Image 1 (spheres, rainbow, N blue to C red):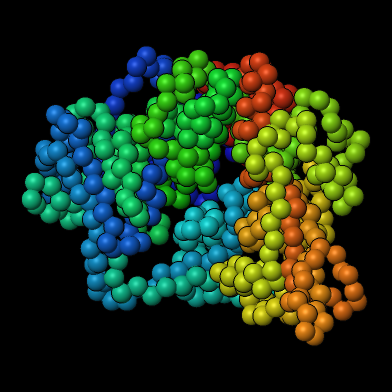
Image 2: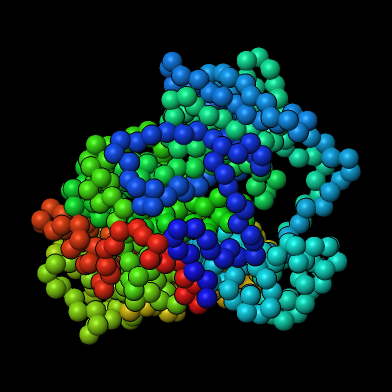
Length: 564
């Protein structure tokens, strides 16, 4: 059984060995910057984590990353020349890209076993492939993918035989992602009027903080503490990685995840969850030799830009505290708005349920007994959705919503999704109907059947919100929209919610739902209400994660154990 625990932070990556890191190392494309924080936590309670803040630098050869020392400070650049260490001192360095022609065309390819919206389902899929005897890797070239291990399936013939064999067994969505490369992006850096073409680069700031301007439209400038490095990734591009103590990392997460205007107990609860989530998920980017990303696929992280005193105080008040279940860090999942009821883990992703992540009605008034009246039928979900008062979130705009999609829009959404997956039904030209075919006790749609001109496509769990534009969560029901032909010489056809005549035809669907996001664990908007009611952060966490315990980070805790 795989585990991750202090003090070594070791875990079993899927099909990879996690390389050893040394802060300040020059080799392996490293950029190191150190910083100090006020009243630092003990090292055992303040581990350094690796966050990819620019994940795929090189997809656009025009992109640049600019690193600058703060006023009055300097950067020391360290790199190798002919195998010997070299240093340069400067106040500014620009990292760019140049195309490097290859001596001969090179085939770059991998066997894609499955494609997913989320890491959680990708990880479960990887384990299923392992049990079938195929060693997998989890990657994120764009969306999450499970690959057949590239070291094992290391020749074009072996890869093609694998795809052919799996498709013959009925795994029709397995495909070979191939690309012939004539050139690759190669990193260089410019400092003091000179250009150096090096993959390996380390940077140290005399003051411990660096201003980073990232590519974007417009470019984004933020200040980061901790250490930085640029390193190659699995996709032929580069990643800018921030190595940062977790208590410093939280300064760049908490105010952006919940907002500085939240009640103090809600911010404290968010802080504990953000700390727990980060330490629980250190395995996500093992394939690329870092641990977390800086966007909503992990947690929003913006360095030391936009820090807030109230968030800093919450970090200090909860220093080193994590949420646990049976001496293991919990999956500290949270979302913006649940729509009045939280979801179980398996309502959204594939994999075994977590005992502490079960449906909780997000109200202090006992509005609905979900164990007695589960929301797994169309009748019950419509009754529940008709209640719009008495919930912790009921003053928020996304608590309830109604969005519409025409059949043409649904067709476009579905074709794009199937095409990207090289699905055998990607050639469809028309969607005829949409029907919810399975619903969980929390009301979340588990499967939706889309009838097309080439057959029925079934979407499951969080793939539904990946494909369809209209639903903001899985807590919804659908209503057909009908078009009534008008009499000759009268007004244009009228779109209505129910068929007024036998001649009416469906032109689209109205999605009526609640919440925004996956709905598992704490509702951030719900925690506002609970904080304003005077609940402390311990009580808020117990409400959303029943049966859990707050503990300090220690070498007695398991960070992650494979639940399968």
